[in-house]
Amino acid sequence: MSTQGTAYIDGQNVHRRIRSTRHLGYCPQENCSMNYLTVQDSLYLLARIRGVQHSRIKLIVDTISSLFLLDPFLNNYIHELSGGTKRRLHTAIALIGPPLVAILDEPTTGVDPNARQQMQEIFLNAVKAKLTIILTSHSMDECERVCNRLGIMVHGQLACLGTIQHLKSKFGQGYTIEIKVRSTDNDINAITIQNVQSFLLSQEQYHVEVKETTQSTGLFQIVGSTPAELFQLLEENKQRLNIETYTISQTTLEQIFLSFGKRIRATTD
Image 1: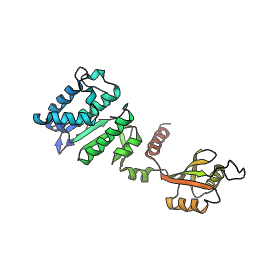
Image 2: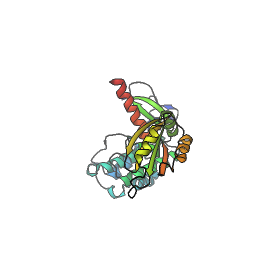
Image 3: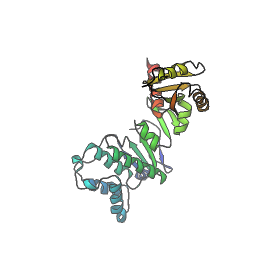
Image 4: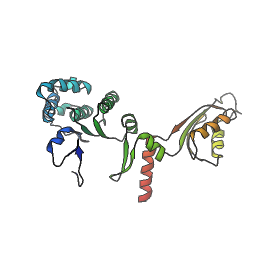
């Protein structure tokens, strides 16, 4: 239950106009469908509650059932479904109609990879069709693929909000460099990744953190530089350091998410 504030859907205050809730779809985190309805019955019921015209209900139910891979389960009772299939059903119910706004609370949790990818495609196409989706997820890969704006919540408050590129630029901790040196199997004097590591750590103008190394590969986090500077540094020393390949990438959403977690722990300790 909300504690304060209000919300508007299509310009209508949800507290004052009950009809506005017809334009709202909701997939809760916990499955809460009526267990002794069949999948088909639940889709028909929610379509009617949503106000879909009677002549269009069958077409809409058939379409959304096909999209969410529910056709084989239409005559099954909901309590007979697996957890992943229930999540697909709840998401389908939230999007049937369709509404103007859909709130989806971790809709792909427990869903197999193929169905998850299918659901993400549905979300992307729905957004293209001007449906607003508010999605909560702990999967940064999913957020990066589906969301055009993203917020990270800390203690129930939004700590940041913006496009993915904006968040990476504002909160990202520099750049990640992945380096592979040429094989040293037949040459004991060849330069290994340890030499590359020593070289990068000697660059005092940057803050360099070693993330992971093997004999021939290394992952480094570098703060205080631009991609152009890093590219120039590596190109100028590529032959001397025996570098075979390297990649430079921005901080990932996962790293940004974890950095907020570290800040929380630092303030509570």
